[in-house]
Image (cartoon, rainbow, N blue to C red; front, side, top):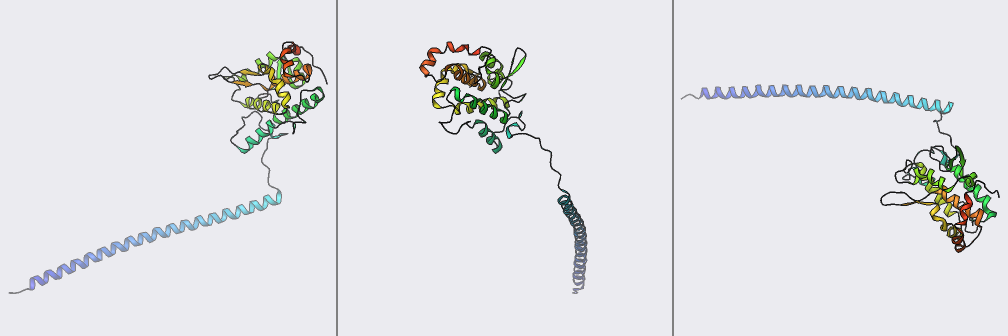
Length: 276
């Protein structure tokens, strides 16, 4: 019995395997060639990008050299006499170092020690007034939009620090309502921040004795804001009015004497101011 047909079949299988291997090899070579071509294109693109970056760097260096030789142009800056008058209508961001530094500058007492603080005496009144005025100007408390020291009386704008004798307490309270009322137009504006800084500064610039005496008149500078829950807000302008009233008309009296004479002291609203 002959085995030749089986041998022929085996040879055919081998030939088929060789053909399949050749096909697979060609396909692999084609894929590899495509990958090499893609890598070459990417390398070319990277080379072009590198060349562009080098050109940009050279141009930047040239620009810097020219700027150094000619003087670099300065960025536009809003001029201000003091930090407090820079952007003085904007709300202060107390979450920043600058904001906290500005707050510290605003509330800092006018005088360093208890011995030099204002004791509501006539001898120190002029020095106190001038110190408050200087602080107010440096902090922007005279700003036309967010200021807290200008009051309109009979159509005339009056400066509280210079004309406190011509501005009645009720007028100060009424015109300060946008600042201290819970729904006031300036309750969440720079004016409210200015008011808070000034009232802290005024309190801390008084001696302990003077603070005790002015507390008798708290109802003339501390007002309810009308909110829920209701808060009491100190109005700096009204506090300044009380301080100068006590200085001008009561002198260095005891708190008991001030309580007894409080009703009589209301004549301070007459339209004249004593000069010291």
